[in-house]
Length: 258
Image 1 (cartoon, rainbow, N blue to C red):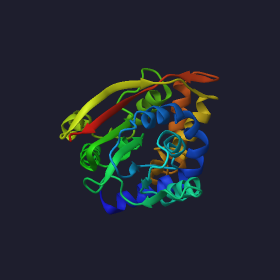
Image 2: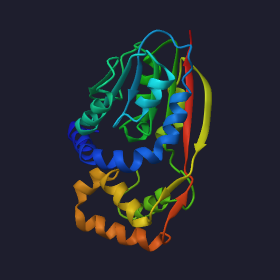
Image 3: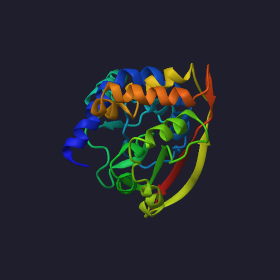
Image 4: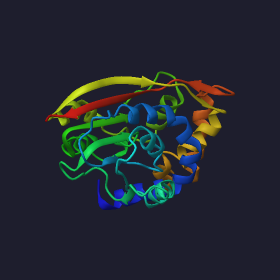
C-alpha cells in the first residue's frame, strides 16, 4: 500500500469516526469485552498497547480490568484519534498516538489488544508479527478480527457478495500466515467468538457500513452513483424489517515466551 493509499484510508476513517462511534461501537461491545478481559492480571511491567484503537472503545474495560496500568491507543486516522483522546482525557495514565499501528517497538509492551483493526491493515500478518514482538517476556497478545467468512447469509456476507460483482476481492492469503507470525509466543487461545447483532433494517445497515464503516474509502473513491447502485442490489437481496444475525470473529490470545 502506497503512502497515498494510506492517506486515503486515514481520510475515510476520519469521515467515518462519528458515525462509527454511534453505530458500531455499541454493537461491537461484546467482542471488545472478550478481547480485553482475556488479558491476565500477571502481566509484566509496561504499558498495554491498543493498535488500531479507533475511538478507543477498549479503554473503559481496560481501566476496570487492569487498574493503574499505562494504556496507549494508536490509530492512523486523525479523526479517530481525536475522539479517542476525548475518551481518555480524564485518565493521566492513558495517551493516544496518531500513526501507523502496524509497526510497534520490540519488547515495549506488557500486552497488546486489538479489536477489528487487524483486517483493515495493508499486511495483517506482518502487523501481527510486529505486535507479537512488541511483547516483553510473559506479555500477552489478545486480538479479535473478522475472518474472510463471518456467517452464511448475514449482512456482511450479502454485502460482500454484491460488492464482488463490481470490485475485485482483496488478497486474503494473509490469514494462512497468521499462525507463523506468532513465532516466539505460546498460543493460549484460538477460537471463534460469536455474539448476536441487530440492525433496524437493511437500509440502515448499508448506510452505516458505507458511511461509517470500512467501505467509506470506497464511497469517496467511486462516488454516490456507484454506491446507489450497490444499495439497490443489496436491498434486493436483503430481508425486510429488523435484521438479526450472529457473526463470528476469530480471537487469538498468545503469551510471549519468557
